[in-house]
Length: 407
Image (tube, rainbow, N blue to C red; front, side):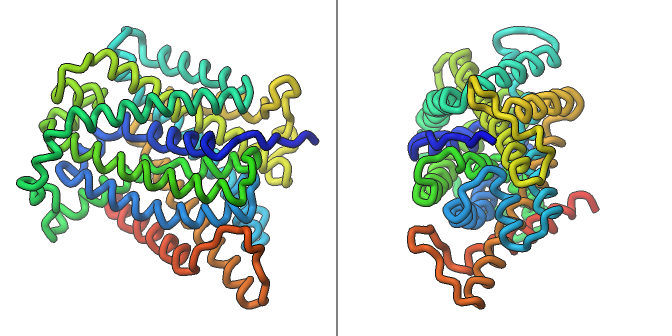
């Protein structure tokens, strides 16, 4: 059985993570989040970032301990030795990747409409097929493309912050508009907005499922995950502040291309160019999710948690061809059948369950090691037990609060 090659450097995996998280949500969902939480959108992003942050540190330690594809499934198995449960979690991660790409395929249509007018299904199918071909081209080639696109993606975010800087200067006199009163009529919309914002923080699972191809993963994975968490959280909060302070909420919440509308309202920067940057950014997030989903299935097949034919590596490109094709076909079905917000909520729910499992896995592993007097290799990145405990409780509370929307 052929092994994946360790060819990904620290800068490359970091750009991969930033590209995954930024491309996964901010360009597409910011108008939808504004429609739910209104002026309190920046607080929604902060809440989502805190919930994701504790889990990110758990990911950092576990990816340092077990740098394998199908990361979450491996973590759960190492903690509880329950193969069926671990396999189920692995499939949940695959579903996250599939549904996320379908979500972004729906979200990108508004930006593409700036340039061409085609039926939505043709736009979605064409884009997903193009990304499938890139994903089977080769892992180094694919990640180099994502790294280059991520630079453009960050540029787009910084552009919005730059042109909205004057609105940021008004925080001193408008800060009270950004803080919700202690009233359930305001708190719960903010929390529901945070739940949708949580979609924008998916990406850590993408990173750890590439760990088998990362150089010196015991050291590089934790560094990369922490850097990605800090950078993306700062950018999200700044962009959301610019959005609510510079664009009327009614206009923003109804936008199908929010980044271009923010730029249009704040500057004379060419709208078509911002639209192009936005398209490329969303494509980046889609490509990363396709790569991640295929790697999870490949990793699961190697530990008998998925059919063995998923372990096939195409010798010419050294990519898991069968898993990538499977992921592509299912994405097409989801993208053509389900609307954007429904897909994003499904993804947020599943990823919260996944993060809960990751945190509780680290708790179990740490307690077992302490009780048995096991000494962990000093080169492994470690976090205090309080971190995964808090991360688990936050994820569970977030899920429970979200249930109120359906009651």
